[in-house]
Amino acid sequence: MFTGIIEEVAKVTKLEKERENLHITVECSFANELKVDQSLAHNGVCLTVVDIKNNEYTVTAILETLEKSSLRTLEVGTEVNLERGMRLGERLDGHIVQGHVDQIAVCTKIREADGSFYFSFEYSKEQGNPTIEKGSVTINGTSLTVVNSGVNTFDVAIIPFTMDHTNFGTMKIGDTVNLEFDVIGKYVSKLMEQRG
Image (tube, rainbow, N blue to C red; front, top):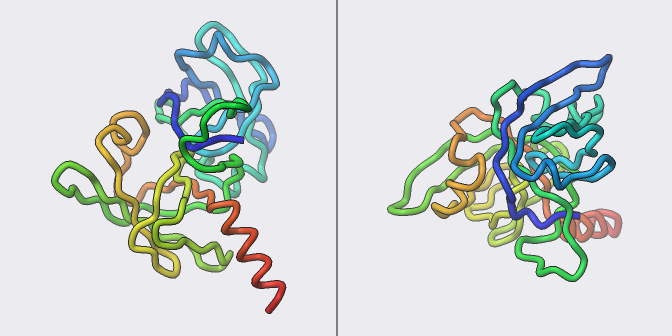
């Protein structure tokens, strides 16, 4: 369980394919605090630490994860948003994030708004994942509030702090991102669908 509050933007240092799996090695400042079997969110994708060496650790993404997320587009040097699992008893500063990516989206527009930034995204409506105005959405693991919600489009407003402390600072139009929709909204939507 995560909150969507990014701890660090870290760099991918090595990618190793093993059959259908992808081993991803990341360099970060808290690698020495990690342990094997610990879960971390990487651009919003929950992955398990399988190895730690000095200031680097390795996680493994299986085919299912690669097919449903933007992790398949990683390159050495790519910056990823990192968050360790939530501690019980701590404040929930973001929103409830499971680290289970629902689908990907494409950044279609970036505009500055006199001190803040608006990012627009478009995603396939085939999976029926809704956004609502002022609802929550997780983009690359970052907890954000939806503005300008459409059928399969939405915007988010980014403050300068978020630009400086997540990979939104390096995002470009055309980039693919991971989306996790609000878990409560998904349950409500499913119940409504079942009731007709």
